[in-house]
Amino acid sequence: MPHRTIKDVFGFTLDRDAEFNTVCTQLREAGVVIDDCLAQTNVACGLYDVHVSSDEEHSCLGCNLNECVHELAYFLMLDVQQDQALTHLHLALHLVNTMWERVSDVCKAVELPKKLWAEGEQNFPSFKTARAWTNFLKHPGFFGMGIHHPIYVVEGGAAASLATHAATVRSSSADPEWVLIDTAFVRKYWSRDHTGEKATKELEKPFTACVVLPNMVTLAQGVCVEFRGFVTRMKEPTWVETSRPICLTEMPCDWWED
Image (cartoon, rainbow, N blue to C red; front, side, top):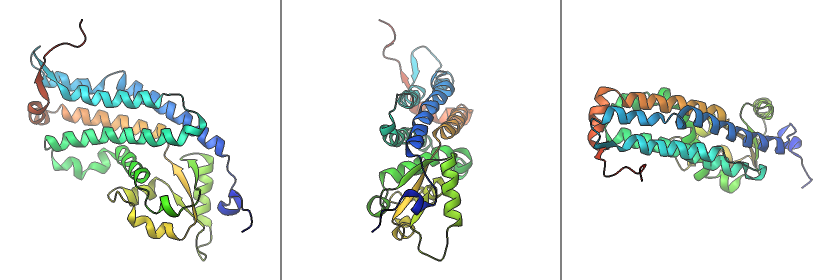
């Protein structure tokens, strides 16, 4: 088989170093967003004020949610080398999904109204996007077995635009040599089916893929809005009444004093 370049296969040239550098930059910027919006202000601690009625009581929920927030902010702001970009992106998405799991667990434990889940796409689109990507990364299905050396570009960048255009205009008469895997693709096949099995038919014919990685700054901004919205909902009287018996405990000691 003759040697083929990225341009031969995908129809555009790619500066892979530049793409991975962009990932590193976005991770740090996303960390600043999470830190400024959620961590430094300890947003979840607002639940303490609505749960606690005396100095002997302590609300565990706000503290535990805050730990997830601080963990994510700290990880995102670590210095990342270019060859570590994908690894850190994968782990960052897992940490965002951890926040979503905590939110989900709270909602199930206090049996919050089903309307919250019925309107989940409107209320939590960024969290659900992160979860779908996490599912894809954990359970890639055929992608992890039959796709040869995929290339990676970053959502919103020039290379991603070129890739999307190339995927749209390529001939539909021949079997595709590559498949475009973006957020829409991942949300379609990895939102409900964690195995990615339903994507197999679309992945069997192409021999490689162009993966459009999510823009972590945009994702972080959405997560901030959704997490703040969740905390605001948890302060509503009905939800305080149902969550207070679960989250409240007597304070055995104060860890902040010697």
